[in-house]
Length: 102
Image (cartoon, rainbow, N blue to C red; front, side, top):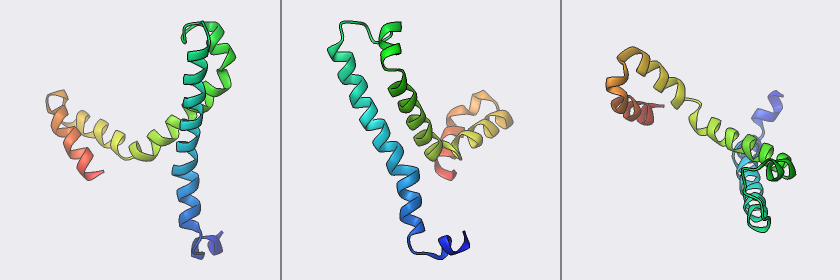
């Protein structure tokens, strides 16, 4: 594993794995879900629609979660910590602080 980190290919590998694959997954599954919602006569929140597209919905959700964790893994704990310290009356200033420093 140490030779992998000294290789010049580890940065593109991490970039593709962490950013590109979840983004492509969300785009493809989002397009499929929108297309499926447009072609079916059912509402998109019905059991029939969800059961027909369950795998797409799960993969879409995992991709959204991965993108959220990529950009929010420092922001969310910072926001929770500062909100617990200073209270909800300073929530907007906590948002600004965590947006800038995390």
